[in-house]
Length: 105
Image (cartoon, rainbow, N blue to C red; front, side):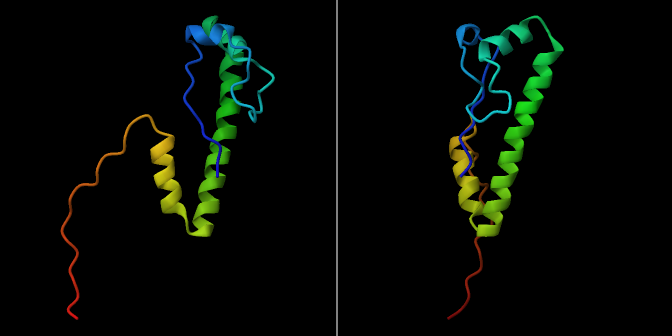
């Protein structure tokens, strides 16, 4: 299963003093959230470059998980888990469709 991702607000006041990495397995974990916050505040191009590098890593993990679940036949369970835990909005209820036809016994 892929690690849980969460949305970070790197420009928020909490990040100014947060000297931890974006995530423990990020390829840019040597740069703290506070440093990234500073780079964003001064509009330094390095901030964008580091965040793109991090995001591409996360996307790579995400699509690797999707491929693995497709191979295992568990993509529906993975999709349900993803919608339940990785999105900020509740998934919409499926629109009511026509009732499936029943076969006669």
